[in-house]
Image 1 (cartoon, rainbow, N blue to C red):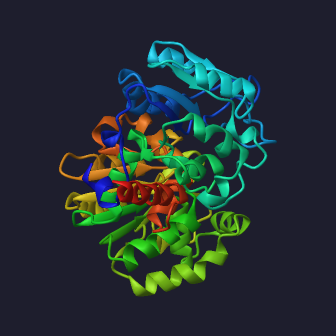
Image 2: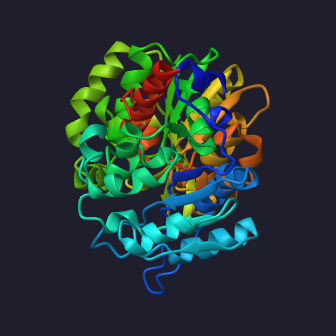
Length: 417
């Protein structure tokens, strides 16, 4: 993809994979049922399988996967055994699993793998040093890299969603092995470039949900860098922006903002609103929960004694008008509490306006993806990201250690040729 070549990262197009022993870093981190300890959503496993692993298997590579699940001490911190079983079902062939990462059991299994086979190692976060941040050269000295790297021909990082972490399994191997981006990484970077680096104009960002600090940082970045023409706000983000601009939302809604300690963001919100008064759009009306019923009120009727649950019709109409002429759109966060049927309107109609063939659209965030699935819009959007923190940091304009490590590896590889 051209967006990848621009940032000088090697891709699988440049890797002769046949009979090569490849260390593949995936992000298989999946939701776990706390009572059964079973995986309840295999989306990430499926995406890596269909986009990258299957291609490497077809090319008769010897594929060894390292990945993580949860954090030590958390309820979802488990082995990778079930992940290997799920991956076997998706690929239609056996994926071997070994409950070891750097010991003799793992090393012997790696040495014995044959072309076209897949082996999954144990949860890489069982290693005490894995989650310590560091430079690639520092991590290259860890047992993980020093013991495993000599066994491999190359390293492939397919875990964009974990690449905002400078962890050993993300950046360490890039210092000592030829390193490439997998197809998931490649596709994510290419899609995000189209809404963040040089988007087709007009470009519009729609920011809803509850992560107000992230939304504020993204708003500043995309307006200061002239990436987006407009930022449309909704959800708790929209409420906070309204509150910061002087609107009294009522006791119940203001109390929630205080409980979430969001008032500390308001000076920065007022600053960005003063600099871009025409480009940041706030709700014109709101839908509240009046005894279980949807009631819409204009913002001039604030404060309200009822809980704010959605944007109103006038806001939907105005946002749809702006979106109708957009060529590039990024959307993250629902516009209201779409889980309740009477408050689905804002999220559903804005997503429907975004999901049109005449624009390139990237959607991200867990609740956003859930809403897209609920309204059956996934196939109508250009790209739906499964990344979380990495996606947000990328859109804030921050460098991702995993991506930067691939760039440095590519520079070294280019010098050798």
